[in-house]
Length: 319
Image 1: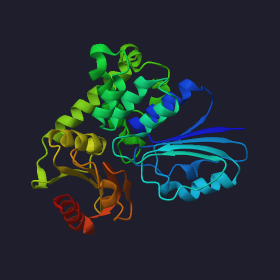
Image 2 (image 1 turned 30 degrees about the vertical axis):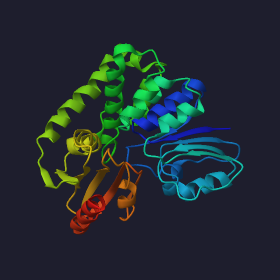
Image 3 (image 1 turned 45 degrees about the vertical axis):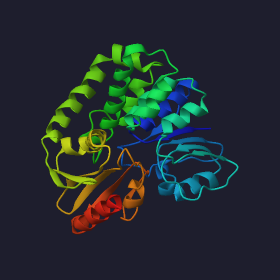
Image 4 (image 1 turned 90 degrees about the vertical axis):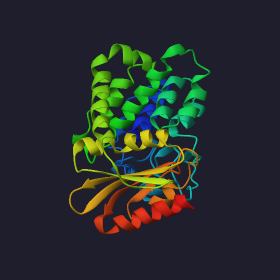
Protein backbone atom coordinates (compact mmCIF):
# COMPACT_ATOMS: atom_id res chain seq x y z
CA UNK A 1 0.00 0.00 0.00
CA UNK A 2 1.25 3.47 -0.94
CA UNK A 3 0.24 6.88 0.41
CA UNK A 4 0.13 10.13 -1.54
CA UNK A 5 -0.21 13.68 -0.24
CA UNK A 6 -1.50 15.98 -2.98
CA UNK A 7 -1.52 19.64 -1.96
CA UNK A 8 -1.47 23.21 -3.16
CA UNK A 9 2.00 24.75 -2.86
CA UNK A 10 0.72 27.86 -1.05
CA UNK A 11 0.41 28.53 2.69
CA UNK A 12 -3.04 27.01 3.03
CA UNK A 13 -2.10 23.74 1.33
CA UNK A 14 1.22 23.39 3.13
CA UNK A 15 -0.15 24.28 6.58
CA UNK A 16 -3.05 21.88 6.13
CA UNK A 17 -0.69 19.01 5.35
CA UNK A 18 1.59 19.93 8.25
CA UNK A 19 -1.35 19.55 10.63
CA UNK A 20 -2.34 16.19 9.19
CA UNK A 21 1.15 14.72 9.20
CA UNK A 22 1.96 15.94 12.69
CA UNK A 23 -1.21 14.16 13.81
CA UNK A 24 -0.56 11.06 11.68
CA UNK A 25 3.12 10.76 10.72
CA UNK A 26 3.80 8.45 7.78
CA UNK A 27 5.98 8.12 4.71
CA UNK A 28 4.12 9.51 1.73
CA UNK A 29 4.82 10.63 -1.81
CA UNK A 30 4.40 14.40 -2.05
CA UNK A 31 2.70 15.80 -5.14
CA UNK A 32 2.59 19.58 -5.36
CA UNK A 33 3.81 22.55 -7.39
CA UNK A 34 3.47 26.30 -7.74
CA UNK A 35 0.21 27.76 -6.47
CA UNK A 36 -1.46 27.84 -9.88
CA UNK A 37 -0.47 24.22 -10.60
CA UNK A 38 -3.70 22.62 -9.42
CA UNK A 39 -4.24 19.75 -11.88
CA UNK A 40 -2.31 17.54 -9.50
CA UNK A 41 -4.41 14.40 -9.17
CA UNK A 42 -3.64 13.36 -12.74
CA UNK A 43 -0.02 12.98 -11.57
CA UNK A 44 -1.06 10.59 -8.78
CA UNK A 45 -0.53 6.91 -9.74
CA UNK A 46 -2.70 5.56 -6.93
CA UNK A 47 -4.07 2.05 -7.22
CA UNK A 48 -6.00 -0.50 -5.21
CA UNK A 49 -5.83 0.00 -1.43
CA UNK A 50 -3.60 3.08 -1.75
CA UNK A 51 -4.38 6.17 0.33
CA UNK A 52 -4.62 9.67 -1.13
CA UNK A 53 -5.00 12.96 0.73
CA UNK A 54 -5.96 15.98 -1.39
CA UNK A 55 -5.68 19.46 0.09
CA UNK A 56 -6.59 22.91 -1.19
CA UNK A 57 -7.10 22.20 -4.89
CA UNK A 58 -10.41 22.51 -6.72
CA UNK A 59 -12.31 19.27 -7.08
CA UNK A 60 -13.95 20.74 -10.17
CA UNK A 61 -10.54 21.06 -11.86
CA UNK A 62 -9.55 17.51 -10.83
CA UNK A 63 -12.85 15.69 -11.37
CA UNK A 64 -11.79 13.20 -14.06
CA UNK A 65 -8.55 12.35 -12.26
CA UNK A 66 -10.42 11.91 -8.97
CA UNK A 67 -12.89 9.52 -10.58
CA UNK A 68 -9.99 7.54 -12.06
CA UNK A 69 -8.20 7.30 -8.70
CA UNK A 70 -11.41 6.05 -7.07
CA UNK A 71 -12.01 3.56 -9.89
CA UNK A 72 -8.46 2.28 -9.37
CA UNK A 73 -9.48 1.33 -5.82
CA UNK A 74 -7.72 4.00 -3.79
CA UNK A 75 -9.34 5.74 -0.83
CA UNK A 76 -9.36 9.55 -0.89
CA UNK A 77 -9.67 12.22 1.79
CA UNK A 78 -10.42 15.53 0.05
CA UNK A 79 -10.39 18.79 2.04
CA UNK A 80 -10.88 22.07 0.19
CA UNK A 81 -12.65 25.44 -0.01
CA UNK A 82 -12.62 26.12 -3.76
CA UNK A 83 -15.55 25.69 -6.15
CA UNK A 84 -16.19 21.94 -6.35
CA UNK A 85 -19.21 21.46 -8.59
CA UNK A 86 -21.04 18.16 -8.01
CA UNK A 87 -19.22 16.04 -5.44
CA UNK A 88 -19.04 12.35 -6.47
CA UNK A 89 -20.76 9.85 -4.18
CA UNK A 90 -18.32 7.03 -3.55
CA UNK A 91 -17.70 4.79 -0.54
CA UNK A 92 -13.95 5.45 -0.74
CA UNK A 93 -14.25 9.24 -0.88
CA UNK A 94 -14.37 11.39 2.24
CA UNK A 95 -15.00 14.97 1.11
CA UNK A 96 -14.88 17.98 3.42
CA UNK A 97 -15.71 20.88 1.11
CA UNK A 98 -16.78 24.32 2.32
CA UNK A 99 -16.70 27.27 -0.08
CA UNK A 100 -17.77 29.96 2.40
CA UNK A 101 -15.49 33.01 1.98
CA UNK A 102 -14.47 33.13 5.66
CA UNK A 103 -12.92 29.66 5.74
CA UNK A 104 -9.93 27.91 4.18
CA UNK A 105 -8.48 24.42 4.02
CA UNK A 106 -6.30 24.99 7.08
CA UNK A 107 -9.36 25.89 9.13
CA UNK A 108 -11.28 22.87 7.81
CA UNK A 109 -8.31 20.65 8.67
CA UNK A 110 -8.18 22.17 12.15
CA UNK A 111 -11.82 21.20 12.65
CA UNK A 112 -11.14 17.69 11.36
CA UNK A 113 -8.28 17.30 13.86
CA UNK A 114 -10.16 19.06 16.67
CA UNK A 115 -7.52 21.75 17.04
CA UNK A 116 -4.52 19.48 17.69
CA UNK A 117 -2.06 21.70 15.82
CA UNK A 118 -4.04 24.92 15.70
CA UNK A 119 -1.07 27.28 15.45
CA UNK A 120 -0.39 25.91 11.99
CA UNK A 121 -4.05 26.50 11.09
CA UNK A 122 -3.61 30.10 12.21
CA UNK A 123 -0.56 30.45 9.95
CA UNK A 124 -2.46 28.98 6.99
CA UNK A 125 -5.47 31.26 7.54
CA UNK A 126 -3.26 34.34 7.71
CA UNK A 127 -1.59 33.17 4.50
CA UNK A 128 -5.01 33.08 2.80
CA UNK A 129 -5.62 36.68 3.96
CA UNK A 130 -8.26 35.58 6.48
CA UNK A 131 -7.06 37.74 9.33
CA UNK A 132 -10.27 37.81 11.37
CA UNK A 133 -10.84 34.00 11.27
CA UNK A 134 -7.12 33.53 12.06
CA UNK A 135 -7.35 35.82 15.07
CA UNK A 136 -10.47 34.00 16.29
CA UNK A 137 -8.61 30.68 16.11
CA UNK A 138 -5.61 32.19 17.87
CA UNK A 139 -7.76 33.47 20.75
CA UNK A 140 -7.93 29.90 22.11
CA UNK A 141 -4.11 29.62 22.19
CA UNK A 142 -1.34 30.92 24.41
CA UNK A 143 0.51 32.99 21.80
CA UNK A 144 0.93 36.26 23.66
CA UNK A 145 2.60 39.03 21.71
CA UNK A 146 3.87 36.70 18.98
CA UNK A 147 0.71 36.57 16.89
CA UNK A 148 2.12 39.10 14.37
CA UNK A 149 5.00 36.68 13.72
CA UNK A 150 2.57 33.91 12.80
CA UNK A 151 0.84 36.33 10.45
CA UNK A 152 4.15 37.21 8.82
CA UNK A 153 5.05 33.54 8.42
CA UNK A 154 1.71 32.79 6.77
CA UNK A 155 2.15 35.67 4.34
CA UNK A 156 5.72 34.60 3.50
CA UNK A 157 4.80 30.95 2.90
CA UNK A 158 1.94 32.04 0.67
CA UNK A 159 4.17 34.45 -1.23
CA UNK A 160 6.66 31.65 -1.88
CA UNK A 161 4.04 29.64 -3.79
CA UNK A 162 3.53 32.14 -6.60
CA UNK A 163 5.38 31.83 -9.90
CA UNK A 164 5.03 30.47 -13.41
CA UNK A 165 7.21 27.48 -12.50
CA UNK A 166 9.37 26.19 -9.68
CA UNK A 167 12.40 28.22 -10.84
CA UNK A 168 10.60 31.43 -9.82
CA UNK A 169 10.28 30.32 -6.20
CA UNK A 170 12.71 30.71 -3.32
CA UNK A 171 11.84 27.19 -2.09
CA UNK A 172 10.18 24.31 -3.92
CA UNK A 173 6.88 23.79 -2.04
CA UNK A 174 7.70 20.17 -1.14
CA UNK A 175 11.10 21.23 0.20
CA UNK A 176 9.55 24.06 2.21
CA UNK A 177 6.98 21.65 3.63
CA UNK A 178 9.76 19.25 4.66
CA UNK A 179 11.50 22.12 6.41
CA UNK A 180 8.39 23.34 8.23
CA UNK A 181 6.88 20.00 9.30
CA UNK A 182 9.88 19.36 11.54
CA UNK A 183 8.35 21.91 13.92
CA UNK A 184 5.15 21.10 15.83
CA UNK A 185 5.00 24.80 16.72
CA UNK A 186 5.51 27.32 13.91
CA UNK A 187 7.16 29.69 16.35
CA UNK A 188 9.97 27.17 16.77
CA UNK A 189 10.54 27.29 13.00
CA UNK A 190 10.86 31.07 13.23
CA UNK A 191 13.25 30.79 16.17
CA UNK A 192 15.35 27.83 15.07
CA UNK A 193 15.45 27.94 11.26
CA UNK A 194 16.55 31.54 10.86
CA UNK A 195 18.11 30.87 7.46
CA UNK A 196 14.83 29.64 6.03
CA UNK A 197 12.67 32.29 7.65
CA UNK A 198 14.93 35.17 6.70
CA UNK A 199 15.20 34.00 3.09
CA UNK A 200 11.42 34.19 2.80
CA UNK A 201 11.27 37.50 4.65
CA UNK A 202 13.98 39.17 2.56
CA UNK A 203 12.49 38.00 -0.73
CA UNK A 204 9.02 39.19 0.25
CA UNK A 205 10.22 42.63 1.35
CA UNK A 206 12.30 43.17 -1.79
CA UNK A 207 9.53 42.12 -4.17
CA UNK A 208 6.84 44.10 -2.37
CA UNK A 209 9.02 47.20 -2.54
CA UNK A 210 9.11 46.84 -6.33
CA UNK A 211 5.35 46.27 -6.51
CA UNK A 212 4.57 49.29 -4.34
CA UNK A 213 6.12 51.54 -7.01
CA UNK A 214 3.50 50.37 -9.55
CA UNK A 215 0.69 52.77 -10.47
CA UNK A 216 -2.82 51.53 -11.23
CA UNK A 217 -3.52 50.75 -14.88
CA UNK A 218 -7.11 51.80 -14.25
CA UNK A 219 -9.17 52.41 -11.12
CA UNK A 220 -12.47 53.80 -9.90
CA UNK A 221 -14.46 53.78 -6.67
CA UNK A 222 -15.09 50.02 -6.71
CA UNK A 223 -12.17 48.41 -8.61
CA UNK A 224 -8.50 48.85 -9.45
CA UNK A 225 -6.34 47.03 -11.99
CA UNK A 226 -2.54 46.86 -11.75
CA UNK A 227 -0.20 45.66 -14.51
CA UNK A 228 3.10 43.96 -13.66
CA UNK A 229 5.97 43.08 -16.04
CA UNK A 230 7.11 39.65 -17.22
CA UNK A 231 9.71 39.25 -14.47
CA UNK A 232 10.20 36.68 -11.72
CA UNK A 233 9.66 39.19 -8.89
CA UNK A 234 6.31 40.21 -10.40
CA UNK A 235 5.13 36.60 -10.72
CA UNK A 236 6.14 35.93 -7.11
CA UNK A 237 4.38 38.97 -5.72
CA UNK A 238 1.12 38.93 -7.71
CA UNK A 239 -0.99 37.23 -5.04
CA UNK A 240 0.36 38.91 -1.90
CA UNK A 241 0.31 42.32 -3.61
CA UNK A 242 -3.39 41.79 -4.27
CA UNK A 243 -3.94 40.82 -0.62
CA UNK A 244 -2.08 43.91 0.54
CA UNK A 245 -4.18 46.18 -1.66
CA UNK A 246 -7.37 44.48 -0.46
CA UNK A 247 -6.39 45.18 3.13
CA UNK A 248 -5.58 48.83 2.34
CA UNK A 249 -8.79 49.43 0.34
CA UNK A 250 -11.40 47.00 1.71
CA UNK A 251 -14.29 48.50 -0.29
CA UNK A 252 -12.52 47.92 -3.61
CA UNK A 253 -11.95 44.83 -5.78
CA UNK A 254 -8.42 44.36 -7.18
CA UNK A 255 -6.98 42.64 -10.21
CA UNK A 256 -3.23 42.07 -10.60
CA UNK A 257 -2.38 41.34 -14.24
CA UNK A 258 1.11 40.02 -14.94
CA UNK A 259 2.61 39.68 -18.40
CA UNK A 260 3.66 36.13 -19.36
CA UNK A 261 5.42 36.20 -22.69
CA UNK A 262 3.94 38.31 -25.47
CA UNK A 263 0.58 36.59 -25.90
CA UNK A 264 -0.91 36.07 -22.44
CA UNK A 265 -1.43 37.51 -18.97
CA UNK A 266 -1.60 35.88 -15.54
CA UNK A 267 -4.53 37.34 -13.57
CA UNK A 268 -5.07 37.39 -9.82
CA UNK A 269 -8.34 38.79 -8.43
CA UNK A 270 -9.20 39.81 -4.88
CA UNK A 271 -12.81 40.58 -4.04
CA UNK A 272 -13.43 43.54 -1.74
CA UNK A 273 -12.94 42.55 1.90
CA UNK A 274 -16.30 44.19 2.55
CA UNK A 275 -17.93 41.80 0.07
CA UNK A 276 -15.94 38.56 -0.28
CA UNK A 277 -17.91 37.33 -3.28
CA UNK A 278 -17.61 36.89 -7.01
CA UNK A 279 -13.91 36.39 -7.74
CA UNK A 280 -14.43 32.78 -8.79
CA UNK A 281 -17.55 33.64 -10.77
CA UNK A 282 -15.62 36.25 -12.77
CA UNK A 283 -12.64 34.01 -13.45
CA UNK A 284 -14.68 30.99 -14.49
CA UNK A 285 -15.96 33.05 -17.43
CA UNK A 286 -12.47 32.65 -18.94
CA UNK A 287 -10.97 29.39 -20.20
CA UNK A 288 -8.22 28.89 -17.60
CA UNK A 289 -9.94 30.65 -14.70
CA UNK A 290 -10.99 29.36 -11.31
CA UNK A 291 -10.60 29.84 -7.58
CA UNK A 292 -12.83 30.77 -4.69
CA UNK A 293 -15.32 33.50 -3.86
CA UNK A 294 -12.84 35.88 -2.25
CA UNK A 295 -9.78 35.19 -4.38
CA UNK A 296 -9.39 33.66 -7.82
CA UNK A 297 -7.29 33.83 -10.95
CA UNK A 298 -6.82 33.12 -14.64
CA UNK A 299 -3.71 31.20 -15.60
CA UNK A 300 -3.57 32.37 -19.22
CA UNK A 301 -5.63 35.34 -20.36
CA UNK A 302 -4.99 36.05 -24.04
CA UNK A 303 -3.90 39.61 -24.76
CA UNK A 304 -6.92 39.95 -27.04
CA UNK A 305 -9.24 39.40 -24.05
CA UNK A 306 -7.65 41.94 -21.71
CA UNK A 307 -10.11 44.77 -22.22
CA UNK A 308 -13.05 42.35 -22.05
CA UNK A 309 -11.77 41.00 -18.75
CA UNK A 310 -11.37 44.51 -17.32
CA UNK A 311 -14.93 45.33 -18.40
CA UNK A 312 -16.36 42.16 -16.81
CA UNK A 313 -14.37 42.72 -13.61
CA UNK A 314 -15.31 46.40 -13.29
CA UNK A 315 -18.98 45.89 -14.08
CA UNK A 316 -19.33 43.02 -11.61
CA UNK A 317 -18.28 45.10 -8.60
CA UNK A 318 -19.92 48.29 -9.87
CA UNK A 319 -23.21 46.40 -9.58
